[in-house]
Image 1 (tube, protein in one colour):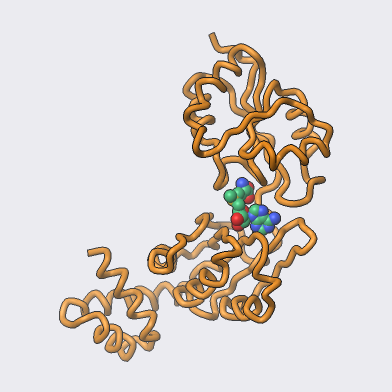
Image 2: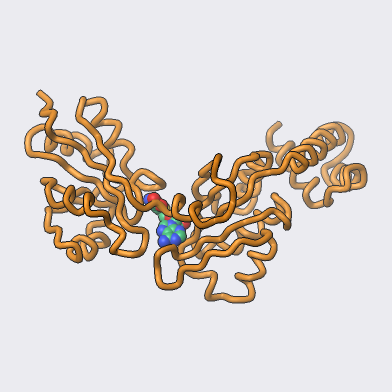
Amino acid sequence: MTNLKHTLYVVATPIGNRDDLSGRAIKTLQSCCCIYAEDTRHSRPLLQYHGIDTPMRSLHEHNESARADAIIAQLESEGSVAIISDAGTPLINDPGYRIVQACQIAGISVSPVPGASALIAALSVAGIATDRFLYAGFPPAKSMARKRWLQALVQQSCTLVFYESPHRILASLADIADVFGAERELTLARELTKKFETVFRAPCADVLQRLLDDPQQQRGEFVLVLAGAQQTDVADHEEINSTMVTLLKHMPLKTAAKVASELTGASRKLAYEIGVVINNAE
Ligand code: SAM
């Protein structure tokens, strides 16, 4: 029989500044019988800093499914359990949803202890509309796949939010400028709540140039907040797309891109990339 008093707590931890762990998060973590952490070595200093000595076990993407039964048994017999990730809110590009789902199925209550998440922190200082946004996570690692993935978002009129790592920030920014246009407004939010926090908003191409000019700015963790498409951008994209669909029925990709560029005024490169997406979709 499920003990309804026991709860799975999904606890957000700081994204950089250790003092951003909430009072309720501290109390919850202290009172649970076990904390499941994405990486126990990573989380230990934070827990020690806040005087939390609850036993910890690991819960990462490779053992999440295997751990579910044991966690449910613990919740049913021992007490409440918390899950935390390396930074921010668990389940947001982090492990945890399988455990949450397993608990729901088992009739165990699941409760959030909200706190930091890099995407919300970035949106709160981006200076770009936040009434509607699409959190898209990490763009694919390889440029071809990334461009195709970005192309699929080009007509979205809501704000777009991406995560990115230092290894790919330059390549991703270059692709974003190519696909969305050099003038599309972008906020780069880097190392939020940490010593070298940087937030700036500029056209995509200028953001890329600023990072190229200052390699220090290429380091750390990034959230990219991209303004949504204006109605005119959507109309332009639709025109290039339909022109390319027609032309590709009659001529090779390269020629079609050249003709579409002359007909619509779009860059040959953009017409070509849209053509690649059309060809791949067939
Ligand atoms: N669960 C986390 C959350 O709620 O934001 C996200 C985890 S995801 C694996 C890690 C990514 O989040 C980083 O690669 C980076 O894109 C973003 N991120 C995390 N901390 C950040 C920070 N302090 N500043 C900027 N971006 C951050």
